[in-house]
Length: 184
Image 1: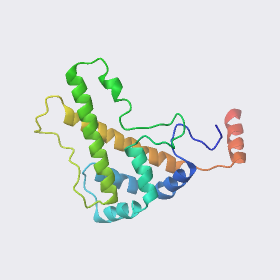
Image 2: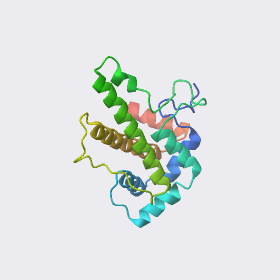
Image 3: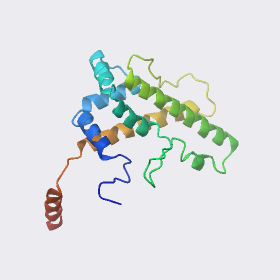
Image 4: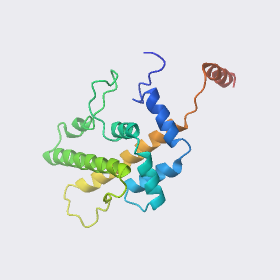
């Protein structure tokens, strides 16, 4: 594997550059995206900023890949991603209600995530409701979907923040930093 590949991030250099250009030191945008995704109040100014940001088709592709991953023939070996991977661990050798619960809450969370992506593209769309009070739900599917959705959106926004916040350093700068670190 060459040094340019980033096996655990599943993003290439072009994507990293766009993430940095868009989100570096831009917590206000990330927080506005989170508020929009969670159905919280968002100012008209922030909605317009989000809409302009996601007018970039390349950024939409990155977000789609992060939020709702699908099998991709071009994915590097060992980096295949799909929104349904991992569900088998929740449904193997468990009671029927648990299988039903796992599949239905995952499907609902995926739908909510797709809606969030559409909201980023067009913030005037109907917002997602995270309210689960008063809903008859014997298996807790709605609360499970809600909480998985919240965790997923938050983790992906954190991913963007972390990537955007990484500083580029030359090989000489890295060598100097590593030398200083090992001297301490």
